[in-house]
Length: 349
Image (cartoon, rainbow, N blue to C red):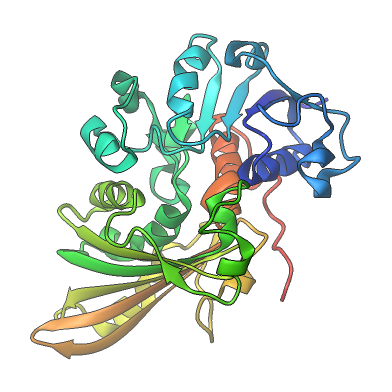
């Protein structure tokens, strides 16, 4: 018999489907309920063909407090601006919450309004959520009741820059280009994500104004880089899954090159899901379908007293960049082994 019970609210999207898949595999957590506005009364395979016949569960339509009844944890796969309307009702039930939306990642209600285009409906609850990046906030997550899982771009870029931030070497401005797969746009097609304009194409969107920018700056400040500013250009690529981030940082030339070459390995020693590849650089196909991250820092030439360091980082946007990290956070807040249902390495190529 499994020790804990879980419900998913917002289970018909790509992120919801990945959470469901991981929960069905989980040895300690039983998935008991899936709430959705779509596919009501239909089996899981109606939305997620890979789950056909794996469970008797069906999508249900119910108030959030009903979905949470008797549950140890509720995982939210809802869109931004929707989670914030649901969370207060869930809090009233006493359940633990892991939220995948951006509604509780920022501590500043003003920053939320600026980047999400809407006043936060419950700004008093922002401080109650712990930011769910285990590589930075593991112990705080273990002690938390409410966790805001990071965004996909944010996770990827933060982990690429975390070694420099923790060492105190990250200052001033950072320039980042992040290339992302189409599943990050969600299950509902749009003119910009439609296959004919996505396949064989590269295009930018929200240059220098992406909503993950304040999240990343806030997280890097907490990691040891106060005042850092990010100039971020996201790029849509003809991939289904994956994010490849390249960040350019200028570090004081007094920092030894050998230290920069070793800092990522030292920073992530013992981290269950972060790899620093040897003999090659990070690549999307090495992590696609898994909760793993690859990170590498490459020191460059010195000019005017500063050394250029290029930081590469890759994730699967739906797993470590989304649902897998939500499960990782769920494991932590339930006091379970962090790697449960997440250890599979994905396929290659």
